[in-house]
Image 1 (cartoon, rainbow, N blue to C red):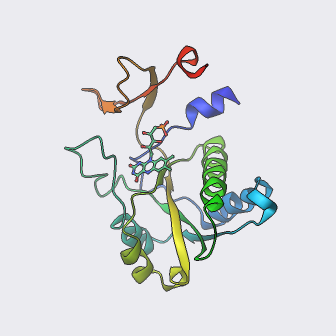
Image 2 (tube, rainbow, N blue to C red):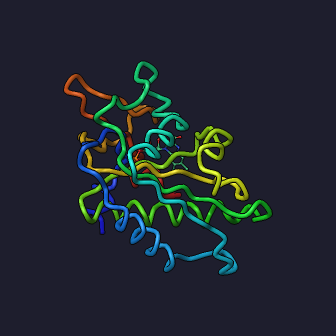
Length: 186
Ligand SMILES: Cc1cc2nc3c(=O)[nH]c(=O)nc-3n(C[C@H](O)[C@H](O)[C@H](O)COP(=O)(O)O)c2cc1C
């Protein structure tokens, strides 16, 4: 489990030509059936996107890596080849966000186990996304997950000086600072 968790980094550059199969996106969604859910309400509904045109539309609705201010996001050729949009009915309570976190992590761990990678997005132009995909209109868009075959190296470092900013080195390796166990324990 530890190995899988370390492998499961947020991936933002992909081998775009190696497409993630649509059936696999559905298998990832099926895995969320077994997730914990507040009150067991299971309020989440999912939209899977896998064709190139849909992926380009979804891509244009997301904000990438806020801390990398000089990087606008992945270039053509290194963009995700699939997306899963997590939604809920408009009247779902705040607990839906906890459910969504558990579901998103389940999807990403399942993807990582099969050699895929991805990134969760809360920074979404929601109205634009719903315009592109009318199936979303009756729902509240909670999160988006971009997925594909990883095209970058991401490493975890122990955090220094409380600096949470991720960064890229001269070889374009993405570094993610994480708090140490000592810091986590009260
Ligand atoms: C709820 C949530 C929302 C996020 N939203 C975005 C986002 O809008 N854009 C983005 O590039 N990354 C987003 N991320 C990814 C985080 O930046 C990433 O998890 C963090 O940098 C740590 O990297 P790691 O996932 O490899 O541990 C989000 C992550 C979470 C959990």
